[in-house]
Length: 305
Image (tube, rainbow, N blue to C red; front, top):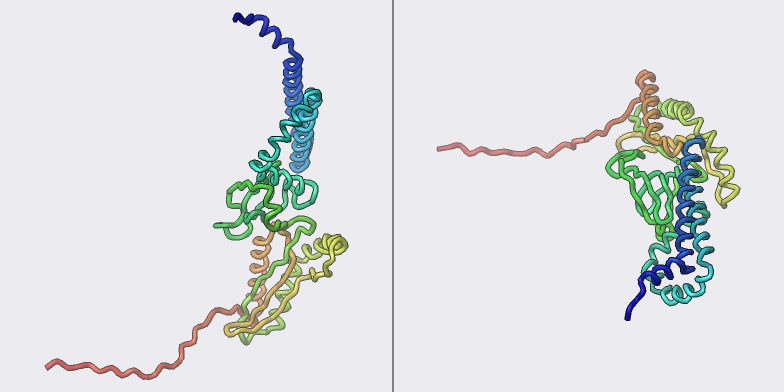
């Protein structure tokens, strides 16, 4: 049986489905080029890293939506037949891609539920760091901590599946209230002027973290109106406790979530400077070791010969 190859090629070239495939391909290329041009325009003319990032994400999102709608429009006549095939394979696909589906649902929850946004400091899936990108499947975090003391970057970029927003708690350090409560303990030796010690610690606290307290009051108002939560104390507070070695003065204060380590450095520096100026009325305590009196030990030496 002879087959006319030329006739077959001509039939496929002029087949309606071939024309639709070519139209879809050309349309997708046009949409892709338009997305790249718009992203470059956003990068060039939009000021600010945050706005520039959001503009690129906005362009990409609507570009993908436009491509999906365009393909659906081109093949609208064939969607009825495809629906039957998709219905048969739907259960298997859903089972095989359940983690992907949950991650997409997590991305929807993050995008519209206010869990976190780019720039926030969060803890997700056991990893703490700053959010640098939110994708459809994964959230990218610049990690802090681990082998690095304090809230400092350690250099690792971690990508976490968005499905973790449904599996574990999401800790947001900088969402609606971008401040944290922190404490330092100053050991003062017994016999010091305790009132003077309390006064100089309070004075240093007002000097170093007083501005944070004022800014925190403005941010705390909307939080108390939105949630059922008490009006917490935001001013620096000093408490005293005695133990076997020294008198502990604990300073509790509000600080910006990215400035905990540097603020502790400034507080301790100023407190030590003020203690040095107190003419030995206030002294820093050190751990002491008391050696109790031991019972006498009798040693006998045997003589040779």
